Image (cartoon, rainbow, N blue to C red; front, top):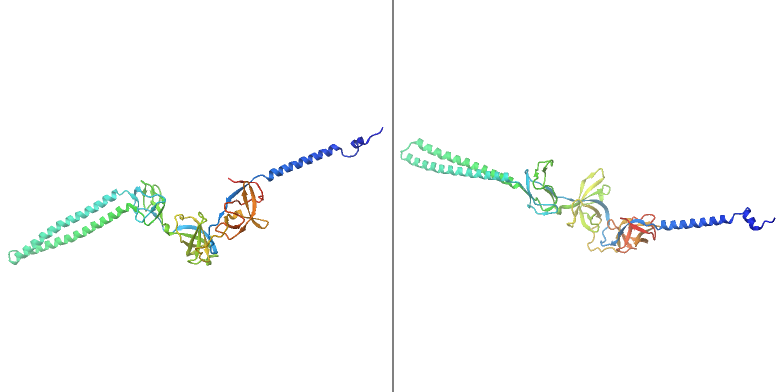
Length: 401
C-alpha cells in the first residue's frame, strides 16, 4: 500500500499546522492586550496642582546681603484695666475700634464712690460752718477785749478781767487755726474721693486700636486679681499702630554684617507683592543659645492698616538703599516649585486644556519668594506646581481638589 505525501506530513515527525496557527493567534492577542494596556495606562490622567503666573510688578532692588524671618511687633501695647475693683456697667469698645487718648472705654458701678464723694464734700461744708461760728465768737471776744481795755484805762475794771478777755481772743484764734487744718483735711478727702470716683471710668492711655475685648457688662474687674473665677483683670488690649516694627532672628554667624540704620526691605507673608522700605533700628546685644541667633529690630518706614501685630515677615538686608524710580524687570513671577530640571534645562509644564506642554524658561533674579521667568512664559498662563517625575510632554492631567 502507498502512503501519499499529505498523510506523511500529518503523521510524520513535523509540527502540525494547527499548532502554528494557535501560536500565531496567541501572539496577536498578547500584542493587542499590551497595546490596549499601554494606551490605557499611558493616558491615565495624572493628578497635579496648578497655579497661574503673573507679570512682575516689582522694581529692581539692591542686592541683598542676607535675609531673615521674624514677626511684626508693637513697641507700645497695653491691657487697660481699672485701678479699683468694681462691676462693669458699660463697655464701649470692641475689637477693631480706633480710640483716642483719654477716650472713655468702660465704666464701673460708681454708686458707693459717688456717696463717698458726697460725704467728703459734706465734711468740708461742716468744717467751714464750724469755722464761721468760731469767727463770730472771735469777733465778739475782740470787741469785749477792746471795751475792757477802755475800762481798764479809766480804772473802772480790774486787770484780771482785762486779761481774761484777751485770753478769750487768743483761744478763739487758736480754734480758728485748728478749724483751718480740719477744712484742709476734709478738702483732701474730697480730692481723694474724687480720684476714686474718676477711677470708675476707664480711659484710653494713648491713641491706638483695640485688638482684644476681655470683659463684659456685669463682670467684676480688679487690678489685683489673678484672673481666676469670675474676676477679670482688664477691659481690653490697645495697640499703638504707629509703634509697629519688625523683630527678626539673624544667625549669629552673619550678625556682623548687620549695622544700625542699614537699609532693608520687608515683605509680609500675607502680601508677598508689597515691598516695605525699612531700616535697622538696633541689634539687641543678647544671643539665643538654643537657636544660635541674635534679635534685630527693624523699623518700617511706611505704615499701613494692612500691617498688624504678629504677622510673619521676611526682611532682606540690603547693601545699599534701593532707588525709588527703579523699573520692574520684564518677565513673570511663578512659584519655585513649578520649575524643574529636565535634561539640564529649567522647564515648566504649561497646562493646555487637560494636557501639559513642557516648555524651557529663562530665569532671572529671585523676586521675594518667587522665581522670575524672563522668557518662555506669558502672564496669565497656568503651570503645574511640583510636577511629578512621570509628567512629560503631552501627559494628561487632572487638577487636585
